[in-house]
Amino acid sequence: MDDLEFHEPVEVGCIVLIESFVSRVFSTSMEILCRVEVEDMDSGEKKRVCSTAYFTFVALDRDGQKVKLPPVTPESAEEKHEYEAAERRRQVRLNRKKAIKETASKLDEIERVRTASYAGLDRIMANHVFFF
Image (spheres, helix red, strand yellow):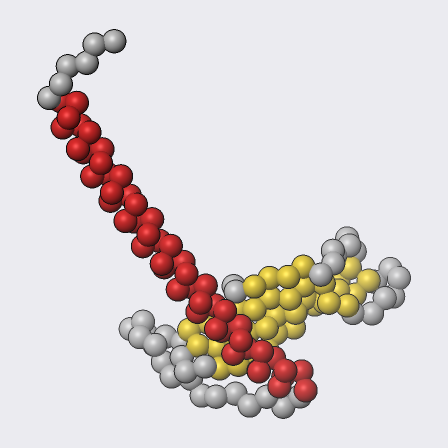
């Protein structure tokens, strides 16, 4: 799941409806928009959006290799809007993934330095007697 937004709570006794559609297909992945709507049976209030989420799925064959997907053509105004916005969301996801990898790499380097420092301290302490 890429993003989840809660717009408002769902009250007990309401009917929850989940609508989803493919917002965009990239080369081997697709973004799915899921919209959670609620309908209040007691008051008769019609559907309102209470939550939205974006999911990204990668197509894989039986051997776990990525598979090229056929494109999707948006038709409605909403589909066209989501199709265009999907590219921006994809760039955000890719940038976030890159930042996480860079941070993990820096943390690994810090851990290597820390471990090497402790090993050097152990050698120093093993060769000296300390009185307190």
